Length: 154
Image (cartoon, rainbow, N blue to C red):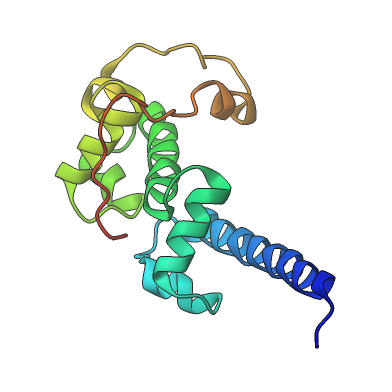
């Protein structure tokens, strides 16, 4: 017969293992945001089912893997649009989005204006700031009131 505390220890060890795997998934999204990514491939990479990965990721980070990926893509798109040397379409494909419509919708949800308006606006609050500080100041924050339908990762 097993000792009752063994089950708790195993559960705590499993949670730590899951958190380490979730960090690997988050780090992979951060590194490979411009690549085609989907939950199944991310889950296979850390030996989890897609459903378990999605539930655990949302529990740990407060958003689904897809929402996290799109936030990273929009964050990078903001930096490219501030540079001003690429069109919105070029930026869309550079950050890994396959659909200009989906990119524009997500960008608008996170930033509060369409990418074309963001690109045209005069230099904003990040003017003259080092890029690492500008990234923090301009980081997109999902509009909590807007309902978000989350399709599979593209």
